[in-house]
Picture 1 (cartoon, rainbow, N blue to C red):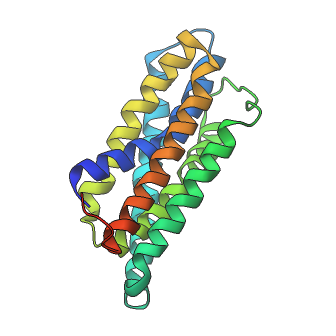
Picture 2 (cartoon, rainbow, N blue to C red):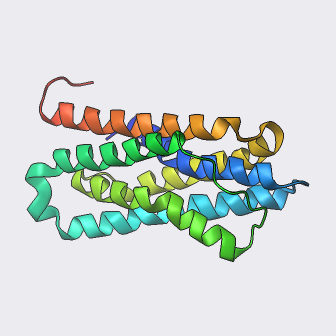
Amino acid sequence: MGVLEIFILALGLSMDAVAVSICKGLSVRTLKPSHALTAGLYFGGFQAGMPLIGYLLGKQFECFITSIDHWIAFVLLGIIGANMIKESFGEPDELNDSFNPKTMLPLAVATSIDALAVGVTLACLNVAVVPAISLIGVITFILSAAGIKIGNVFGAKFKSKAEFAGGAVLILMGTKILLEHLQVFTW
């Protein structure tokens, strides 16, 4: 998996956090720079930490899953992507303007669970984990911080589009990994 693929993966993974950030921005009457920084740190930090945990778990079982790693990547990314697309059509979440740890921690965990599964996929594909999780964390930090501003300015109309796009990207990445391994075609 090359840098461009990891960048695209990071974009897809970050879309849940971006969607939540847009909603958080929508809920804030007076936007402060600390709001964007807080959202970026929580979401970016968890989006970087969860794949590391998944990677470490995946490495423990690598000898058992090497022969089916492409199928694992395809299924995990497909399920995560389909779930994001399904959520994009759902009812909007209740808005809460608090940025305290009691509010932000559950949001950060909830939006990064899919990154845990992606970490297992990274282990299966023998991806260099430190650059990958760093890129995932930085991309999520930047987009989440921007999402706070976008939500504050434009409202919730971009939330469902962000979730849908993120889900579609993850499904396409999983399909690409599977097709490359089955040698249907190479990019």
